[in-house]
Length: 255
Length: 67
Image 1 (tube, rainbow over the protein chains, first blue to last red):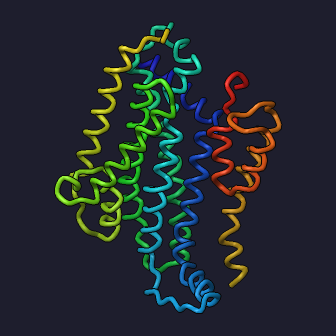
Image 2 (image 1 turned 180 degrees about the vertical axis):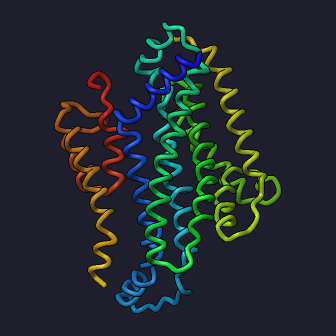
Image 3 (image 1 turned 135 degrees about the vertical axis):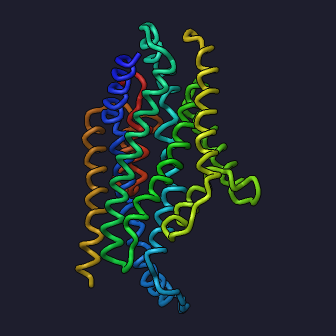
């Protein structure tokens, strides 16, 4: 089982590099890593230029590292989330539709191993991208802002990693349940929107994994964080993998 | 001040150029594309920043039967 899992994981890593998936994610993370502190720092100047051409005067509070962090969290939890769904939606459904999964299943490979190897590649991709983003945001923020808390920022990125991991795992699980990547993508997008709307509510909304973004800011500010979204993230991931295995086992390759 | 901005923004330009070059290399090796014509994809990844190359790499290049 272990050697099969290792072989599959290696296959997924090779595929991730060959399909440019890892490269795309790394470059996007690099973009966000540079753009977040830069856009926060130069926002007053940009607004002043716009205001001068329109005869409007904008008054903004002094820009601090908090604005850069807020921009970073916003970029990843909005655009980053959509890109993550796009990158993960074809993981299993794409292989079903192009026939490569059927080819794999004629060998003694467990479906569980296939899913685990895909999740392993996803974890690798997220760690790679977030490391790049953390380093770049760290460098830019330390240069542009005073008092940037580097260590809490690195710790807070663990929460962002969990956020993206939940989205990725849910998308891969949906991808294992359906025939076409677009269906998995739309399903995951819908679930993400539902959880985002839920997160905006009080009460049960505090369990939404989308609250991890605001918990990240709490952690950087030095406040204690709530464990509710972390626990619910674990439950969502285990539940979605369980559901996908249940459906995936009943899949008929001839269909 | 201007020099500082140029230096700070330069890595973004480099990342964008790398993406466009990868797309161009891949595009020149393929005869058929997904969804749109070859020329349309060329224009998209050359002139739409960041999202153009990503759209090409994620969707455009995956023509079934050519991959």
